[in-house]
Amino acid sequence: MPQAEYQGDFAQIKQAMETALPALQQVIEDIIRVSQGLAAGRLNVTHQAEYQGDFIQIKKSLETAALKLADATAKNAQQDWLKTG
View 1 (cartoon, rainbow, N blue to C red):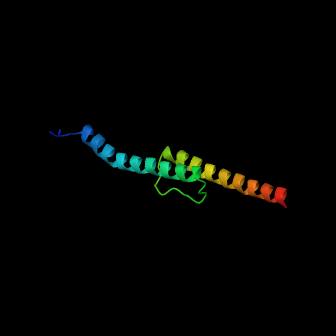
View 2: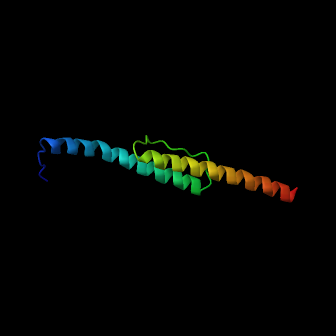
View 3: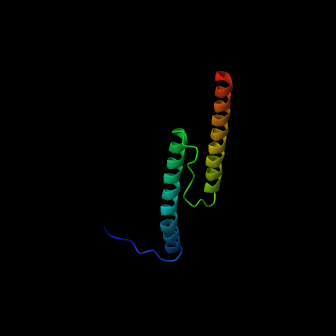
């Protein structure tokens, strides 16, 4: 397959894309791993990818979801214990 030679601004765009795409793939894989872990009840699962830019919001949302799930699980366990004595 022939490869085009990029020059000027297009060379910079190509380089930026080649840098960004692997990082984006890593973030997507991380989101999937964390969300699947939380869905399976693993509350200690944490992110491993380095989040930058707008992806920081996703990282914060995953952390918030994990904390709320852990809190709800602890409250449910406490209620179960109170109910069963």
